[in-house]
Image (cartoon, rainbow, N blue to C red; front, side):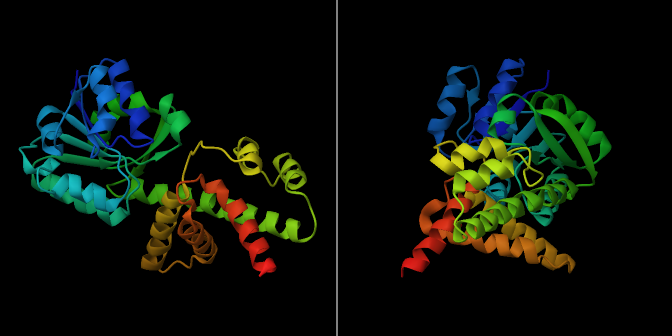
Length: 295
């Protein structure tokens, strides 16, 4: 059985990595904050002190990190993954990265005799815990087949988008309408509130209409009452929306709608709501407008 390495135990990684222990794979983990790895160590995983130690142990190395800078650091930094002999190892980068970053990391891996696929995922913490994510893969068919037993532990579906970088590109494509939807919902609610409608009435009607996404009925209580549960936080949505806008600019594709949404996420993050669920921009926009009227 292939030995698995897993780096990054944030919201997603913390529920993804244990699935390899449950499936019987030998597992070594690393996280920048070592305390987050202790529970996995108690459950049977080996806890590495550096990314390099993970690369030395594993046949397949999976990373699930917060942003491009973190990914570059664990691959290329001191005691990074590529600081040791990685000949014939396979790296599966599951973070949401910009396509050029994925291609750059792949190039460094190839120079060191290793293989690389980018495989960002569609899905949040709940499906991740149940192994029901969808992986969006960029890489060769041969490398995907080698990765498949590991990806099967985490996913309900694997979409092969093309060569390296195309998984990252597809992830940005999927995230764009989601980011825009919460912006449009926030605008709709702000309009209704200005016209005298109650928030609960608007959400009740929208959740039972063609204006709803599949997830909206689940988010209504969060909008109305608030919650500590966070599926996809505002700061991460701002980061991804920035990547989308920049990628559109690089390809010469106008991005007016997501640019407007990005402005709202940026303002909400600056207002201290970055750790809240992305749907909180609904409250942020209505609260901001109400406060402006009082001034």
